[in-house]
Length: 101
Image 1 (spheres, rainbow, N blue to C red):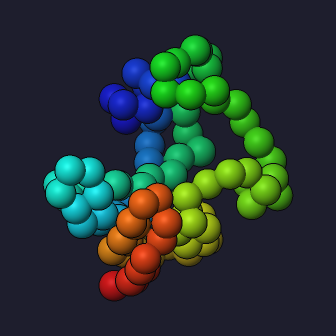
Image 2: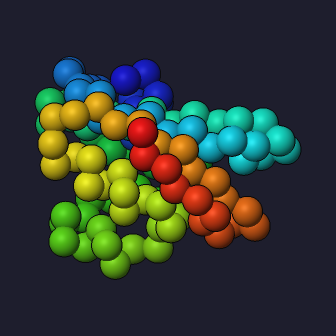
């Protein structure tokens, strides 16, 4: 919630945990973790950030945007109430393996 506010200006009032993704040895041999949440209950105004250009897009447009190869898996997680977990391996910015647990 804190990071969302800092990076967007939106205050999340409630969130649902969707899943966790591990990226073994992603950067400099260090493992990285990504936690995914969703929320429909927020307030605030979108502000500029050094994280990139942020703007709302329609759900139908998401699949046309440039993303990492495994991202479409995480988007499908939003359609159920389960907590998901996956391990993703990239080499030279290309997906080598995707394992969902």
